[in-house]
Image 1 (spheres, helix red, strand yellow):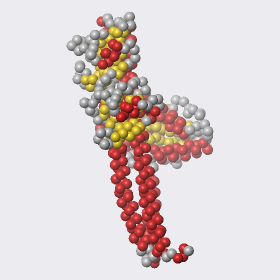
Image 2 (tube, one colour; image 1 turned 180 degrees about the vertical axis):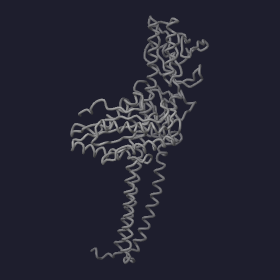
Image 3 (cartoon, helix red, strand yellow; image 1 turned 90 degrees about the vertical axis):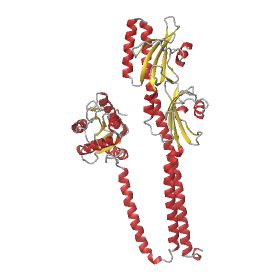
Image 4 (cartoon, one colour; image 1 turned 45 degrees about the horizontal axis):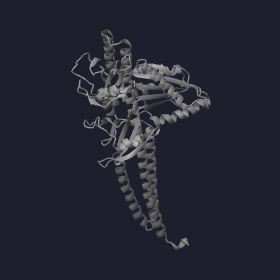
Length: 514
């Protein structure tokens, strides 16, 4: 039956199938990439809200601790002149130590200043009409209250008031202790997130009051969001769902945005991140369009040459040779891409992917041979301050210089690996090396970097320095996990930074046995 059809027919069928397959695979690949991009977008939103929630919670908690201490002192020691002077000194010290604070104030039951961190007593200011003052006067609760953002009468700046009730000895209302949080402190933190030109992040109270929005909108701060789709969706959820939920919403501007939110752990507020779906997909659309044009052109060429295939069968050898050349070039390109995928483009070191693969291999080898495996985690001290002062380009140059030096000073044995672990963190994997040997390598690197004398005015040392954590493990099958080694070195690095930086710290105890 098949012999009834000519070779031209089969060639046409073959070319048609190939063209349709190319188009089908391209469509499938494009849709898969789109789904992965949207999933990445949702993960980005979740990570942003997690960081915002933690920062807001920690910021308010630090102010609340200061308030609780002031309330206890005043209610215990009274409001005599000596006691108030001690409280004033404490308040001044707290404002100096906490950059998020603009000021600390104590008001009597009539809303007049008793004492404050500014060291002035101006009775012209009376805050009895403020929302937080009215709240404490009408509520007997002793817990903290996060008020509505207002413009401070004493400084003229936008503030978020955090307050506690002050009671008289008989339990009646005796006044308010107030901490004013600088809205600009939150804005600077929110500006560090890249949410796109059409994205936004916000801090909102559980009562629906907009505490802060970035991009900043002076006219909307302190306004109600009770009627918004975001707040209605958030208020309908409870429990764990509030920390994981994300939904698409179209605003009045027609933009579809992914809305992610997360509540604060200790205070009646939540944060939200809105990412523009169209903005996130713009690059995907451009790439898809370009690739589709290429696929269609390729399909047209295949059709043209397929039609000519029978007439030019004698050229088959030449065509096959060209195909082999193209195949070899593609394999060479793939090998080049594979090498590039395993190295860090900025520093030239191995990247995190290469590190994970090598750690797994060396961990298995150490189990088989009962060898010791050492790991050094290195971090550039005050690197964020360096970027803030000198710019990210200068920061990249420092990372290149430090990486070049580390690469020159690390052993070159089989299995040894130096990798950029993440950000300014660099990891050094040293198989068959004990703790003293790894410490010697880390100390040699630390001293060499310090001797480079790279200026760093944002550091207390005046130059670029390193901190390092060193850990070793003799892994046992079924007992240890490879992540234990990294975690132990990371904890040692944290200890080095806590001890003052520019030092090498060893893991204080053996890696736990399962």
